[in-house]
Length: 435
Image (cartoon, rainbow, N blue to C red):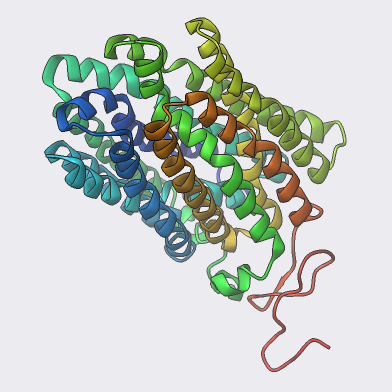
């Protein structure tokens, strides 16, 4: 059953809080590199292309690991799979303190990506399994806010530790946080044995073993992929390049970056809650899932490109204001799109579909980051970069909504995609052929 609540309300709130904590730690570990970018670039004499290559070592590994992480989580379940992922990326975070140059830094960030790929499919699967449908966008918004919350916390934390103990200590501190989380999460699992019976989304059913090949026959799977492929490069640009942009174009030193770089991510956190609350309000007012999701996606895709203006103003206030508005509406788009796997597919397949979409996100972002590095090294033009990435949002809406059709649950029979009311038919049961 989709969204079956097997916990008490208090336990469900605690579970969501733990999932939020995992995504927050995920982004603290991920964001540490971008906060330290000005320091690391000076110490290791890195060009823009060198820095982009380090980021892409993470992103390429993330793209490959995301579908695999979803597949593993649909079989291991959230409890074991997510604990393994957090422990892995925490070890990788600690190892980053040993970096001696671009190559070793890229290798350690690649190891980080292997673990971090399990975080988002985990909470998407948990929400689809245990949260009722009308509350799902709000729960997704809460868990997803870990990205902006972590990105908001990281600048102050990393700058504070770096100023007193050096940048290597910053990676040691951020890398240690995940081990504390694993202890807390396992304690929660011990107190809730029913979690192990349902966390694989009905592992006893045949549909729990639907393959990637089965899922890729759905145009809805490709719609999630396309939405994330086109829109997510803008977010990763904000995450990985804004400290560099503020240092090179606005002349800010590390402490000043730490003082203001968290602001857009605080705004992103507010967007997660505001968008989730708006979705709940609209559905209570009688709006269907299809109308609610597509309306929120449209608003996000049309307003987020205002961030382009940040590159054309010399005012620091307006620079941060335009970026913050762009982040707010990008986040409204993002959490709506991230809800789609649970809208279309049963819990047993959500992590796999989410992982496929995550691969689209990362592949698109790898291409975007590579282009950013090339453009900046050859022309030094940040306006061209902002313009290129900002205009991808409307394209994502057009191609994504055209390919997905109506947003409603699809039918699965005997573990395979069955005929559906809209979309490409799946494969027939064994021994039969469609006419």
